[in-house]
Length: 111
Length: 116
Image (cartoon, rainbow over all chains, first blue to last red; front, side):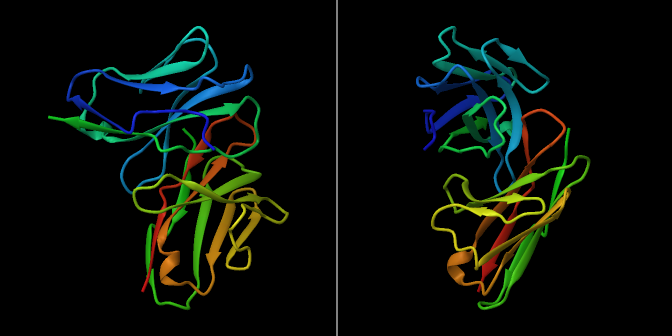
């Protein structure tokens, strides 16, 4: 079973920041937090991952709470093309295994 | 970033025929690839783990004789749906991890299979 909890859906206005929360209260010390997204009828796309420090790349920022029990993915300026299902996944560091997908958050960016 | 190519993107076939789906890692080597299935409005479900040079490992409830997996090289894994039936209609997605890289998994663009 997925070890994360996400809201099923969220709306965001185009051009505004989209903040997607994820709860992972049972996360272990050796587990990373990964974010992927899936645009309709495509394969998942990697966004970002982190262990305990906040991370930023060209796509998004990842804010992880100090106790690591929750995190927030931030899309700073959402566009219509960011409409997708966003998956928050925890995974053991160094794991050779697959990703276990939960139900994710359906983000709808509206004009 | 690393690219995983999946082909075909869409296939329609008659019931009883077999369909082969290819998954290639274009710029990295992948000793392990994963095959997922996704039904409409549902999340991805792992079907099997494909290991280069050895037998695939199937998840519980997935018929190994129906979903044949071959991983003959470090850049290619194939999934063959044998004797397809309408209930096999689904979105099939492969993924791979760069054996020499970090821990990210990269995904193919998926194959929409429709069995008539």
